[in-house]
Image (cartoon, rainbow, N blue to C red; front, side):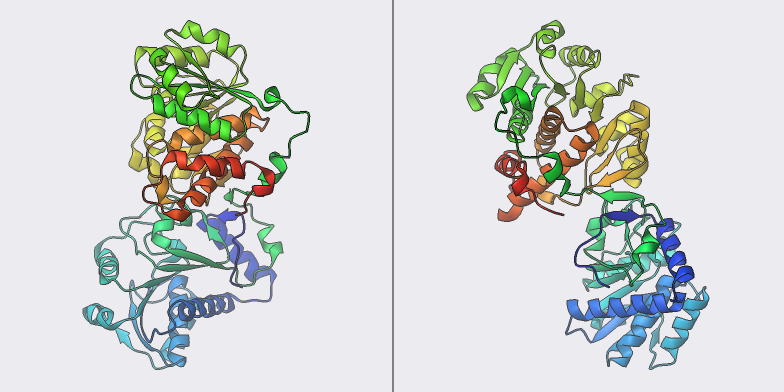
Length: 502
């Protein structure tokens, strides 16, 4: 059944295969019947998305994904469509895929070879990608890479079956090259790589059909990760008591704003206010105090020349965030050392993360919020390596620094050090690719900690609130959206009766 709402669970390719195996073993459905259900579902999607499509090109690999393609081709032929099918990588390997190939051959089959492929593309309405599915184990190269390049450069819409060829189902990384799908219909479960890194861009519109696999099957396989559930906001941000006062909602200290970077710490501080913190203090360069107070008088701004001057502030706050606009000067380093020596809840972001890589601190009671470049610095590797496997990078930071980690980016990931559970945020949009967005997220997370959420809860809900606010702000356009556009929406979403769902 095609899902109108996504489930919250995400699975690895191996887990998806296990679900498939259990469904075959424990129900009265055969492997071939599941394959046929997948083909029927894909064909319905094809006709719904491109109702006028008549000439189809189907590319099939040797695995079961190719079997899905053969059956879809047979269904299309029986429906009067003109189908040209290219077999890549040799004959079908499994019994089910061989049976599917025979089903296609028994009809009005029109096979093409590589020399005829370009001509077939020139008249095609839609291309169906059934080359590799989730079974990809190596980079796409050689003849297959040329095939992918031809499809991508043709400009013809592509329907990918299960996952676009070349996209890693676990990590969302590109294995050499990948097919750029217009629509992807995935089967049985969502795969982790479809919603992070390059996954969303290459999948296009993502649809899910569970092929009527019963719920009891899913209960037997622990999911690799989970989509952040926005409904939890209604539980975690309950309506405030009538007797509440500013001290009831936590006192936040934001540290940062070296020379020329007052804006970053000001954005973080206002985000904390808009997300419900009762009191917000800022420690920054003395020359920035007047500027920040004039911009937002509700912020208590303190000019700090030396680390020792932080002590009175640290004694009266509940949670500290350090990093927005902090810089990497001796002043910045001394402030970080002072904060790391405390037992306060701590959120570390931006420049503070760059400084942290030189420290062996495992303090606990803290959240690190790196983007891929900062994650690379923390793990002493490259940004490309981080993006090749964001899940492994996330776990490595958690373990090395004994922290809750927020790995920002397309499909932001959250994990706590003592947990194998990974959370993924589906919200967010390209309009967030502008300066100051990370500073706003820092303020949001810090405010939630101040209001009593655990570090893990604050990280998850902070990411969700931030991205959801950005989605609301983007309703008038992504291009030109700036970080401060989120403030009004943060206030709206921070109130339980305004919380949105996934």
